[in-house]
Length: 329
Image (tube, rainbow, N blue to C red; front, side):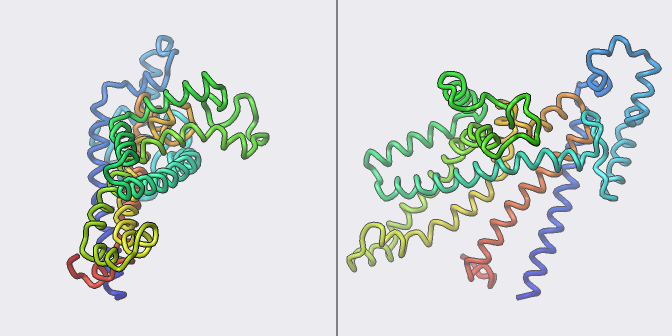
């Protein structure tokens, strides 16, 4: 048992290292081929006042006077020593920027991930238990509609309705404007998080609900469910005792595997609501040619998604003894 566990985590570590290496190479190549001039983005509106000498000094300061292979070699060497570099935008170490911005994104993604999972699973179960009637059709229509709805469009819709028309919630930002951080209360932060979290939750319900519905329909049509019904079991007792055991684990695995969609949706939602998280930093790094920050965020997001997939695999092995023993399902 111990040997299998060690082998599992060793294989996961090897996959992670290969994944990060591939993503780092591809991301650096794409960033280097970008038409954005990082020096012009660095200087901004004062570009006309900067002469050739100043441009050269800025290029030397950030290593932009070197060739792409040289810059990649320096970045990779520093990365192996645990240094992600310095952000050109924030003038801070990339690790510090990611740590600060991810704190806001983590709270937002945790709330929306939990809500979308619970609501999606409940909607899928309700649709399957009422297959073919009006509730099932309503839930499927809702899911099919949301599956084709862009995250930013849903964010704009919620922003228009609840912040502009009704005025119930703040129009954006993570805290009230003009208020120092020490005076911001937990209620203020929650109110500013509601709309971005609603945006991600509403869009994230669809895949969980549709997957759970189809899986539960298949389970309810199985022989052991027919046998349980023949014994007189009905309704919630049948669902709780027999059906849910074959449904909840695939739903949990799918939900953990949706970390990539969650992270990508958070980037768009944070832009719509000007929410100070990692998504805003990603867009700023891309538009202003901040290669060290962009690469750091890309590697961090890859690690984030990989952890979600690994947790899903570990849950399968933990719950299903056939996988722990290496047998086919």
